[in-house]
Amino acid sequence: MFEIIAEDHLGRIGRLRTRGGRVAETPLFLPVINPVTQDVPAGWMRENLGAEAVITNAYIILRRLRDEALRKGVHGVLGFDGVVMTDSGGYQVLEYGGVEASPEEIAELQEEIGSDIAVPLDIPTGLCSREKAEESVERTLRNLEATIEFLRRRGVRRCLWAAPIQGGIHLDLVHRCANKEREMGFDLYALGSPTPLMEEYRFDKLFQMIYAARSAVGFGEPLHLFGAGHPMIFPFIVALGVDMFDSASYILYARDDRYMTETGTIRVEKLDYLPCCCPICSKMSAAELKQLPRNERIRMLAMHNLHICFMEVRRVKQAIRDGRLMELLEQRARSHPSLYQGFIEIMQNEDLLRLMEENAPISGRRGVNLYDEMSLRRPLVRATRRRLLENCLAGRGRGGEALLLPETLKLSLEKASRLPENLDILFYGSPYGLIPLGLRYTYPLSQTNYPKALLDECLDELIAEAIKQFEAAGYKGAYILKPETRRLEIFEKELARRLRELGVEVRELESLKELMSGSGGGAGRNV
Ligand SMILES: [Zn+2]
Image 1 (cartoon, rainbow, N blue to C red):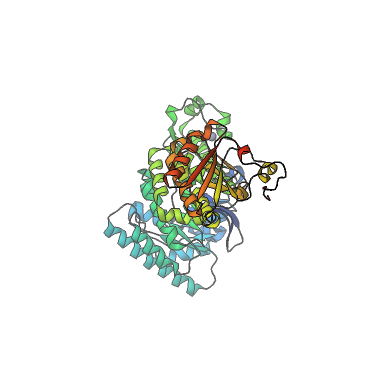
Image 2 (cartoon, rainbow, N blue to C red):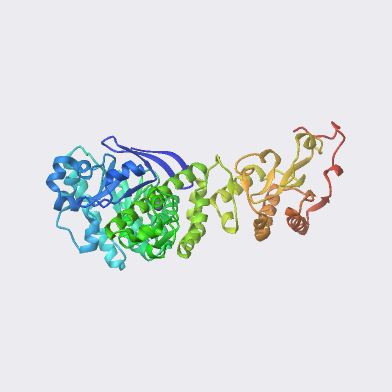
């Protein structure tokens, strides 16, 4: 029912197939639809945005549209033939303190109305004390057991069933809840209670919660995130392993006269221009938008906000295909200081980085762009350095000598063949460390772009990496060719100094001619 078709670190593109045979591609954004009053109809979203899925509320259907839904099915009620997920009413518990329905009643309704993805009645944790959080987890788990027992008695399932993970900011509770659910036989997982964290911009906590849930349930089944709020966090949640997410923000923000962009939100009264080319914004100016009657303005804003959400999901998917998801995170982290803080904490979480490293792409269709110190923490950079060290460089020197050439040097095969055979050729000045000649044109070594500023700012780290690799290789001496441009001047001097400090015999060369034999000469090497 879930097939992964592309991966980039922990982010993935997958194909979800429901029991009714409907198919949707993940990462999947599900706009929240109120079944009673659709401000923006689900059918419009399908036609104009290519929406493959929406989410609606089973409790509202039970209370207000039960007979119609039993007759027409939930797809009929919504006028939407894509994937329909139904939330159980847990949100109503959070908002109003309780629902008048049993877990069995809610489960039966979701099966009967033909929901594609159903959620058992859960008790959202929200932002609360540990005691209350514990209680919400225990009550949720009891409801899940009752639901699973009900489904067992009933026999054939029509819905895919998602296990809601509660526990909130109490990460050990998130872990415990998720672990218990693994044994229960659900089809996918859905992490609850992020909304209060997002409203307070506590992205660091939110990311920790997602990581706790994802690592507890493993990477097989899809993970949904309830109430994923703003598109500025979409790249982050996907990079942490979230496959699906819903949000009502497009309409809630619209009612509050807030205009979404992929990096933040702008109040309509402060808009002098509409910084977007969606069909809505292309048709009118900011002044015209402000002058619309309130209801019409809400509808236009909601449609624009939806465009922004769907655009960002597509951007995230393309980034996964290109192996550039982490790069997108680096860019988006600059949207807001709290998001940046959350990002920094991701990049400082050693367990998470190791997990990402294991899933770092080994090939990519597009190059890698590095910018600064933060880029060097990328799992891809770490993984490449580790692979270089462990698979290529360790023990390579065997007490011999290395010829270190500047990374910027173009070395023709003909030239290389005239260099002494006993010298192992490596290139210095790359963010990945020392690159053996034979690996020079492999991913990502040859497709990495970076400014000279990175070399200057991170000189110490880059030299330390090269030294570590040189030592692990076990060379006793080195020739270093001075760079022909200023880009690597400081780097070369520092590398030579540090190697000498280590007692390595270093000879700096002005030109390769000092080492070359005549054309086809006897001292030449096989390349
Ligand atoms: Zn727009």
